[in-house]
Length: 237
Image 1 (cartoon, rainbow, N blue to C red):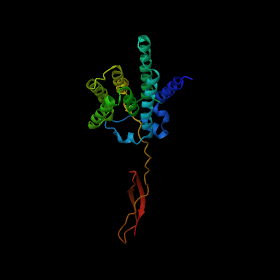
Image 2 (image 1 turned 180 degrees about the horizontal axis):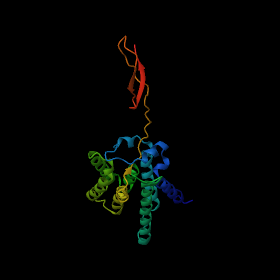
Image 3 (image 1 turned 120 degrees about the horizontal axis):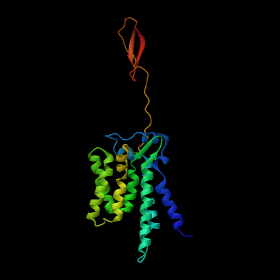
C-alpha cells in the first residue's frame, strides 16, 4: 500500500477544517464580533485551546502535503513544476478555508496560529522563527495584533534575504501570511480572532442595606441598583 494515499488526505484534512468548526458556541459568538482598533492583544488568544490546535494543524498539514508533493527527481522538470504548483495550490486553499467564514454574515478570520505553524514548515524554522518573533513584537508594540499580518510578511522577505532562503517558498509564504489583511481590506470587514470564551458575569441585583438614624421618619426613597435602574423602597426607624 502506498503511504501517500494516507498522508495526503490527512494533510488535506488538517489544512481544510476551519477553526470555527472546532469552536464552542460561545467562542463562535465572539468570532462574530470583529476586533476593535485596540483589540485584546495576544493574551486572550493564548488561552484558547483551538489556537494551539491550529498551530499543530498548520504545521502538520503543511509538512504532510510537502512530503507527498515533493520535487520530482532531476530530469523531470515538467513534473517538478506540476508538483510545486499542486503544493502551493493546496496551501493557498487551506489558508482561504481558515480565513473566510460564511456564517450569518461573511467574516474574515485572522488564523495567526495556523499561519505560524505553516510558516515554520514552509519558510523553515530559522527564517520563519525570526520573522514571527519580530513581526508579532512590532504588532504588539503598536497595540494592534492585527498588524502582525503586515509585519510578518515583510520580516519574512527581510530574513529570507539575510539567510539566503528567499526562494519561491518564502515568497509564497509571505503572500499567504498577508492574505487575511488583504481580504479584510478588500471586503471592508475587520479581522476576527479565535479568543478564549470568558464566562458571562452576572450582576447582583440585591440592594445594599441602608442605615438611617434612630427615630427617623418612615418614607419612600429611590435606590439606584447596580444595573442603574431605580427602585422605590420604604425606609424608616
